[in-house]
Each structure stands twice: as structure tokens, then as C-alpha cells.
Image (tube, one colour):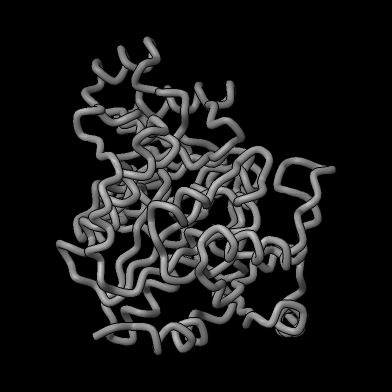
Length: 358
């Protein structure tokens, strides 16, 4: 990952921190090497600790009521705020109307703005003019790259000779990226070289050096860009393990994803993230989640590769119930199950070790 910070960031997540629409903010609060995170903005949790709200563990990142309050809190600090990072991840990637005012406030106070939304803030006439006046930069992470820089699938991924693991999920906003990062860190701490291939805007914001932003791409180039990211990581780093971050889920009606990772990323095996407490697909009441057993079958049918572990998202579960939930998943599926966010990825690393080359 990156070693040099782009700047000191306030993460904007008004009205969404601790919900699925705040998943970009959640990733940044848990881990990023692109920014030094100063605080989170969400008036609902003003005065709270971000880590305590998110994971029940203090991380000394305060939550402020407003952008102005957050900026002023660090104005006399040796490391004042330099960036506002939009941590919202609403359906459709649109900037909520109330957030526009707050982004303008940040720009007027001299902050650069990074956004992973589909509404490109750098093309907003008022924001663009104000940014020019204040000599700050607006970066829209999801802007499509120039076609001259894109790659078509070539088959060069067959040169990749290390273990290649995809982390997919049974739903969207379920923790695939978080699990992939925890797994990469656990492998690295045990002396293996592990490289994560990010596939979304949050991974870019977290400083992951290899990857793409899938939903910024023209469909013709999706498979080639996945292949190129995996191949480039292999060529430049020669890791023992490559970990592919999944997007959406195979059967999600609004965010179908994962097939492109399986088809173009060519993983050797799959880790499947699952939330046992969910009944419906995220944000779509009445659209029942397909049973875990069916989802495992779908992954294995499409990829012809095994699902070697289920990683559990413990939302809606009591901490004391998690071990039994994991045991029940294993009894029903025959696949070992772990909560890596709660307990770390040591057991998952143990499963992967026999397959690691070198």
C-alpha cells in the first residue's frame, strides 16, 4: 500500500455512518494509507467515537456535528484538515441535496474534495468555480478512465503463478473489502507477501496500489482491466497470494456482480462473505436472499473452483451467538465459517497455507 499520505481528511457521512450507505466511510475509519483520518461528520453521532459506533472499539476518531465544526476542531493543530472525503455510498451513487451545501462549505474553507460518487463534483459549475477561486482540487474517483489506457482481455493472466483468492459475497454492502483487507494483513503478518486487488472506489481511497474501479468502466473493458490489475501485481511484486475484492453478489437484483471476477480474475478458490442475520437483499425488502447453500453452488458452478470458507458479517447478531452461528453454517454447508472482523483471520490463513507456493 501507499506510504505517503495525500493529506489530512475529514470523512463526510452525514446521516449514514453505521448504515450500509456509509460503507465508504467505514472503510476509511477502519484502515487507509491514502489519508490521515481526523474525524467523521454525522450529526446523529456528534460527540461519539467513530470506532465505538462502528465496531464497538474506540479508535480516537471523533464524530462532529458539521463540516465547520470538524474543520475548526483541527484548525490550530500541527496537521490541519486538507481534504474532505465523501464517505457516502447511497444507492445510485448520487450526491444527496443536503450534502451539496456541506461540500461547498468545505471548498470555501480551503479543503480539497475527493468523491467516489457517480455525480461528478468537478463538473458542478458552482463547485468548480469555487475550487478554482480557493486553489483546491476536486477528484472524482469514479470518472471513467480514458479508453486509450484501458485493456482488453488477452489471456496473460495465465502467467500468474501464485495463489489467487477471490473474496465474494452473498449480498452487496456485506463486508467483502473489509474481509479481503483483514486477510491480506494477516497473511503479511505471517511472513507471506499478499497483494489485494481493489475493485471499487473505497479501495482506491484506502490506498490499495493495485486495482480498478469496476463501475467506472465501459463493459467491454471490464474483464481486461481485471486481468491487467492481477497480472501487473504479479509482474511487479511477485506475491505469494493475490486477493481479489468482489463487488455486489451473483444474485443481487440491483447489484449483480462477481461473475466478472470469476471469469476474468481466474481465482483458484473463493472465500464467501455472508450475513446470517439478513433476510432480504440490502435495501430491497421483499427480495429474499437466496439460501447460502444455493449461493455456494452458484459460485462453484460458474467458477469450477471451491468455496473454501465462509466469512461472517455479524450484523444483527449478539457477540456471544457468533461461534454457534459459525458452527451451524459449517454443519449445513460443510464449509468452515469464521468472523474475521471479530476474531481475526488466523483460521482462514491456516486453511490457505497448504495452497501457497514458495
